[in-house]
Image 1 (cartoon, rainbow, N blue to C red):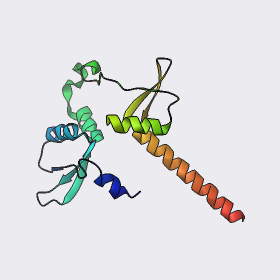
Image 2 (image 1 turned 45 degrees about the horizontal axis):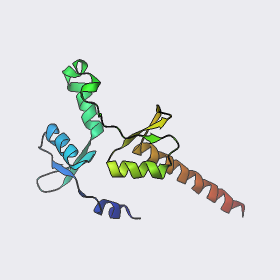
Image 3 (image 1 turned 180 degrees about the vertical axis):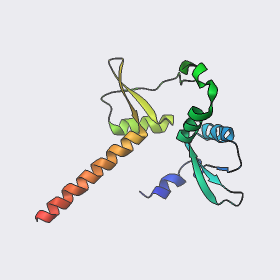
Image 4 (image 1 turned 60 degrees about the vertical axis):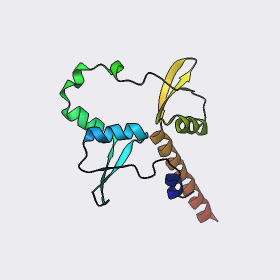
Length: 143
């Protein structure tokens, strides 16, 4: 499947904000439209950058002085979705897609055994594809 087809099927295929908007506006928009990044556009719609959740976290850690006074329970997500540790990647991706989440705790007998992210899955699938391509190349060379 083509990347553009995936993007065109999204509710917000081109999530963006103007370069003069505040970081707070960007965060509010990401939360509102359930996106983890926004394209930064000039008033003439020229692409000049991107802002992601990681950029915001970096800013907060470097510049926000009250962070040491706020306890994590005050801002944490309290409504958790979890999956059994035996879940397949397809099951994980299905739940992530349905719930619009990027991190999922894995459980075994009501005990947390790990945290999987969409980035983990992408990385693992890429490594697997690279390995399979290398094995196929070696097989062809032996023929």
